[in-house]
Image (cartoon, rainbow, N blue to C red; front, side, top):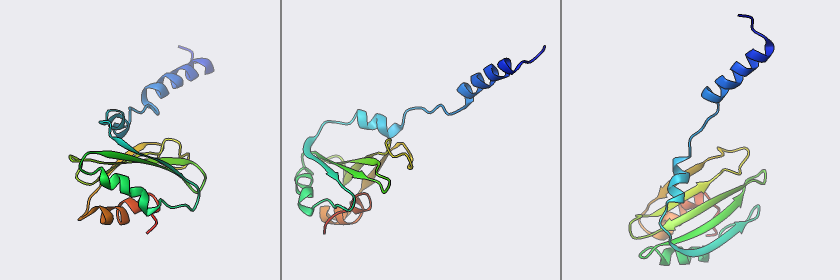
Length: 137
């Protein structure tokens, strides 16, 4: 059997398709798509150097007993957006955060999910949540 350059390229293409960069869906993205709807506390887009005003968390705190979601889009140093979905509710036990980094060319390019817990809402925001978005305080 004589191998030609064309046949080698076809085999390489087939093998790459089978064993190469084939990724399944991000579990966090699937969880995000299937999340229960909650009352909206709005959306905030932060420019470079901006922080989320302390009073912006009031709606989210008020929704702890009934459920609420607050969306913050923040630009990376390179200018790529990362979107954070902060969620609270009676069955959450803290602040549930879905993180969409799919537009961040220099980051993971994936979805992530974190749960911030603490003694009280202010502590959660000033501590864990502030590691994701800058919070005025």
